[in-house]
Length: 510
Ligand SMILES: [Zn+2]
Ligand SMILES: [Zn+2]
Image 1 (cartoon, helix red, strand yellow):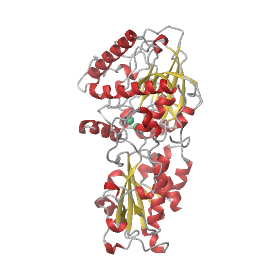
Image 2 (cartoon, helix red, strand yellow):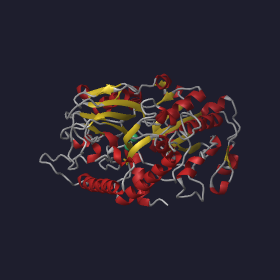
Image 3 (cartoon, protein in one colour):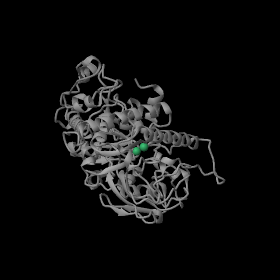
Image 4 (cartoon, helix red, strand yellow):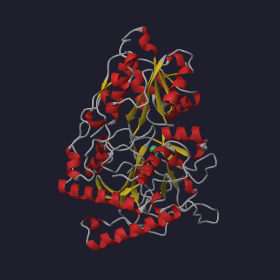
């Protein structure tokens, strides 16, 4: 069972990742004292020492992460060790700490608020490296001075200036637009940062390889990427948002198709039966709506086009659903000018082509997530003076899906990867929310831009790594213990399997 506190923490990350500037960092990362190559076979003492050091480092991190903690004369918050790549003058998603001692390169994985905290027009601590999409977004949204922002190409190793020759390769993260994984490769040349923990490998001739996942939704494409396939990764910084067997949801493409199909069926007035729900009951529209609603009738008539499709989103992310629905309905997408400007920062010509400034020619409207409630959607639809007489609202979050009763809360790793979840997922699995009416139908959509537990397991079994450092839900020791138990089980299963990529259904999802 997941405790309420744990659920709140998870929800906090999913929300903060995307909404307001967040004071509370619930996604710290960690790296310290990498195990020397000899410890791959790991004698008990070295493992003990390594885990002891890591535990101490986490404790130090907990102190400096404490909200009220101000250690430096300038009031600058100290950066915990896990924000700095071990032995390299490189920090990732660490803008809230200002100018970190010894850091010459500041990386940003993506433009969600919990990752760029404190980044503004006042930034002058050093060069910022990110993807081109993220660069456009932070200049537009945060007014960061262009002179600091260095957009890097995807999939191309680039030498990072003033870092002792470290190269970085950006890999699409499958999170929000512009999000990327960073693969750093190079020697350890400096103990940068505020941490008292120092690496013994600084000055050694060994090349280290770190994969920072930022926020991501793991897919076979990641482990098949030429920069990663067959490579040993010393440290993986892993987005562990949904590292709990409870969190299982369909792939993005399954969900996207389901939404597009459902929208088309509803707009054209086709009958839809919904499955699932308590005790596997079959719900039909008649069961959910009043008998006189006549929602199945207006098939392919001019009246049928009277339905507006409204999709709720946070600031950036989930645009793929909007695009798919608009394409299925052969219509345009409308949103307010502020949102449109943000969408234009993204490198997505298909989306740009769909956008229109005329709300009346757009059958799909993109709105804040808060609009997708029965009261607000009514209010929103009525705003257009009778142009639409009904609406369907989609509310995509990672939280909609309820796992079937009796699901094993502690399955073996082998059994997790043996069974691909959600083999079938279609429009009938999207269930109308309780307060839906015949006129205003609301659907929760199990759409996540973070990896499911199944995907995290497949990813970690398919990649060759020495250490995994969890980056989310590591605020409490109890949570860290649970996370490290899964990591140990992955390690054991990976050895038992003898490596290799976990079989997948498509390069896009396991
Ligand atoms: Zn995040
Ligand atoms: Zn994010």
